[in-house]
Length: 58
Image 1 (cartoon, rainbow, N blue to C red):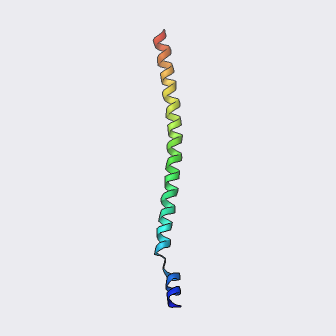
Image 2 (spheres, rainbow, N blue to C red; image 1 turned 135 degrees about the horizontal axis):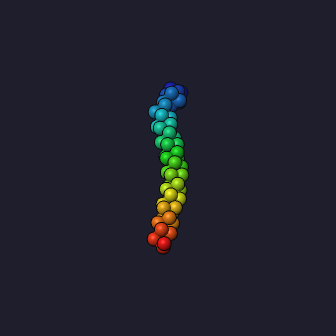
Image 3 (cartoon, one colour; image 1 turned 60 degrees about the vertical axis):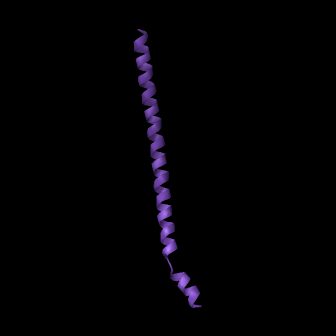
């Protein structure tokens, strides 16, 4: 019975799982932010490229 009580009180694994979940949440937030930024940068570079191409044609 002492063994089961000791297992119930052991929280080291729970702490590791919590840190893993926090790291996963941070990774998801970073990926989402970078995708949004990447889309904005792509739009900006396409606009600049189009403007420069039309300026060279004149």
